[in-house]
Length: 393
Image (cartoon, rainbow, N blue to C red; front, side, top):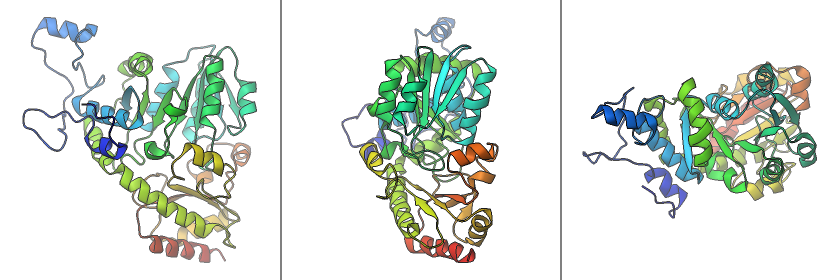
C-alpha cells in the first residue's frame, strides 16, 4: 500500500503492512525458510523472475518485505534491502559495486569497522582507497578521478560528530560517474534525508535507533530500484547476510515509535550538551545542535535536529575512566540509539584497533567520551552526569 502523501510519522506506522485473511492488526511473523509452489511452472517462473513471489528467505520473506517497504516509504526510497547487521549493509554496498582496479574515496572520520573495510579489506582485493577530510570539499575534488566508483561518508560522523556537506559531495561524485553512499545512522531517517541531497545509497544499522531498545541486530540499504534490486540484491542472494524474519518483526514495531523516541532523545541530547558546554571539567562538548559546533550552520541546513549523540572531552584516560565509573543511570556500553543512555570510550573500544596516530587525526583522544542520550528524565540524566564530572576532580 502506498500512502506517501501522508506525514512520515503516519507512514512509519502504516506503510508496508500486508494483512492476510485474518485481518491481523500487528504484522504477521513468517518464520519460514522456503515457500511451496502450486506447480513446477510456478517454481520456474519464481526463479526466472517472471513471477515476483517469494523463493527463499535469503532472497526475501513477507515479514522482512513489510519492514523494507515501510522503511523505504519513510526514507523516500524506491527500494530497500534489509541485512543481518549494519556492517553487513556496509559490506554489501561496497562489494556489490566494486572489482579489482576500482577506486573508492571515503571520509576519514568513520566507525572503526567501516575504517577497517576501507583501509584494509578493500585493498586486499585490488581496490584502491583514498581517505580525505570529509569536511573539505576541495579534498574530495582532488581525490576523485575517472576510476572512482564509490564515495562513502558518515554525517554526523562517529564519534566526533563531524558534519559533511552531502549535497556538495554528491555533486563531486556525480561529476566522475561515482555513486555516493551515506551512513545515516546518527542522523536517523527522522532528521536527515540523504537521497534528497543527492546520495545514491543510504545505509543504516537498524540495530541502533530503529530497534532502539537493545534487542536485535539489523541493517538496511536504500536507493533506487536499479541499484537495490540490481547489484545489491544479486550480491546478497549469493552471500547470505539477510535479515531474519523475527528481527524484521521487532524492527517493524520499532518504526512505529521511531519519531517519538528520536524527538525526545534529541531534546535530552540538546539539554545534556548545553549542560556540558562551558563546564570547567570539560575541555570541549560537541553536538551539532549547539551554535558553537564547527559545522552548526551546515548541520541545521541538512538536518531537522541535532541528533541523539553528544561527545565530550575530558583531560585524558584517567579522567574519562573516573567519569564513566562514577555513572549510575548512564550505562557503559558500545551501542547507541537505545532508550537507555549509553557512554562509550571510543579509543579503548569501538576505535581501539586504529593506530594512535589515526585516532588523534580524527580527534579521538584518550579523554573523548561518546554519549548516546536516551529517554530518561532530563533532571536525572544531568544529575548523573554531574556525579561523573565530580568524580574526576
